[in-house]
Image 1 (cartoon, rainbow, N blue to C red):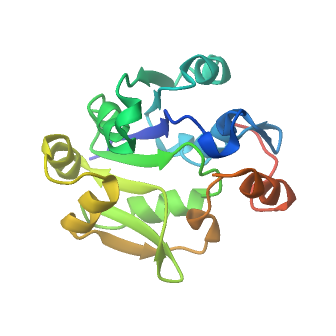
Image 2 (cartoon, rainbow, N blue to C red):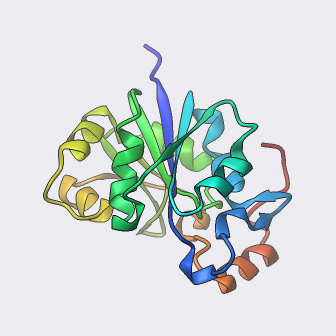
Image 3 (cartoon, rainbow, N blue to C red):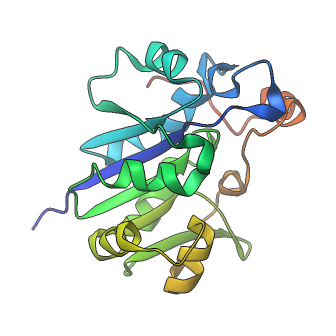
Length: 197
């Protein structure tokens, strides 16, 4: 039986630490940061849902040509990332769902393969023992998360679940672009390679 896989990418925040610039629209290796975040995920997914909020119009402009991506506006984006997680997951119907913040463009294809090949309803990648992104949620974990009223964050939910873990050879799972300094470091890095989307 072939497993169906979808993705949820979180792109609802205000990019306050790179203000006034929207960090997801910043150019990185020939594309935007957001597109680079999607690059590793897309070959493994039947469809991807990108949750928007503060910069919804800008995100729509970046992704308007992508037919395998649906935008989901979260009107409660100011209430925190967990609301955006739920806004995206409620749209999914797959056996498994990758979950990734839109400012994490450094996970390579091998990370996604490792997550899919690991048994468990919640699977997180590790690099040298440290957990990173993306996270894989299989259907039972998605259903439980959508019903959850006790955990105030994705991290708390994953911790309460007791996730499976898989070591990967990709330090990029620990990196995001949160500040202008992070962005400058990314521009100088060879972690993100030129290539098609």
